[in-house]
Length: 339
Image 1 (tube, helix red, strand yellow):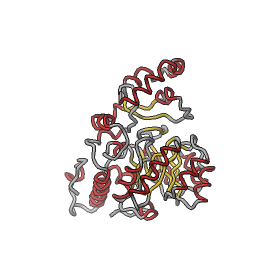
Image 2 (tube, rainbow, N blue to C red):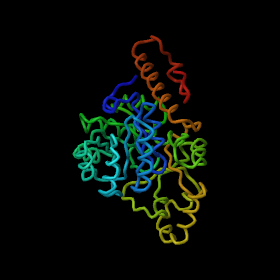
Image 3 (cartoon, one colour):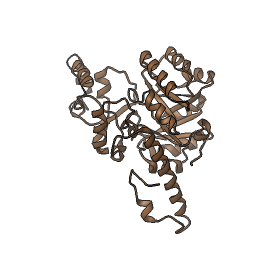
Image 4 (cartoon, rainbow, N blue to C red):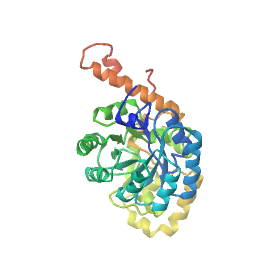
C-alpha cells in the first residue's frame, strides 16, 4: 500500500484522483473511483445547476467514501459554489482562474480546497488561496490546460509550494506513470483519459472506442471547439482532443470560424447529439496509447495502484543489485500487470 499526504488526508487506499471531466465524470463514475479506494471528483464543469443536482445526489447515494467536485473557476458564480457545498463534498477543485474568491468560501465551509495549476504563477496563487492540495497539470493532459510539460512542471511546483502536497496530472494512465510522478515529489496522480474509457463514464460509447483505438500523436491542442460552442475561454488555455475533420478544417483559421458561426454552430450541436465524432470533440490526452479497452473504474483503480506499488519496489531494487527484481521485470510495461 502506498501512503502519501493525499492518501492520509482523505483516507484513501490508492493515491489516485479522478479528473473532474465535464460531462464525463458523473456521480456514478466518481462513486466507483471512491469505492475502489481513490478520490472521485464529479466534473461540475461550467456549473449547470440541474446537472449538478442530479449527479451530486447520485454520488452521495452510491458511495460512503470521500468524494469531491471540480469546477471551472472563471465560469461559475457564487450560487453554483453554494449549491455544490450544500451537498457536503469532502473536496472542491477549482481550475482555470484565480481561486481566491471561491476558495475562501470553500475553506470557510470546512471543505478541502484543491487547486489545479499549469505554471508556477498559478501555484503561488493557489498557495495564497489556502489550497490543501495543488494539482500540477502538464500539457499532455486531455481537455483544457496550459503549455508546460508534466515531467519538468511537477518537481518545479513541488519545490515552489513547499509543504502543500502536490498531485500530478497530464499523460498518466497506468501505474508506471503514477510511480514516476511519486518519484518527482508528487503525492498522487489525477487521471482523466483512462477513466473516460470506463463503463461508468458518461461519455458516448463511440467516444470511448475512439480513445481505445487512438494514439497520442492523434491528439492536438486547439481552441476551435470552444469557438464553435461560443465558450469564452481566457488565454492561454487550449483544449487537447482527438484530431478529427472539424479540427483539421478549422485549426489555425479560428477567425474565419468565428465569422461562420451562424452556419457552423447548428451542425456542430447536431453532431454532438448524434455522436458524429468526425465533427464533435472527444477530449483526450497523449496517454491514449496506454488505453486498450473499456473497463470498470474499480478495476482500473486497483490495477493502477498495484502496478505503481510493483514498479516502486522494482525501482528500489535497482539500487540494491539483484534482490528480487530484474531488468526484464522493470521493462515490462503491460497495462495488464500481474502484480
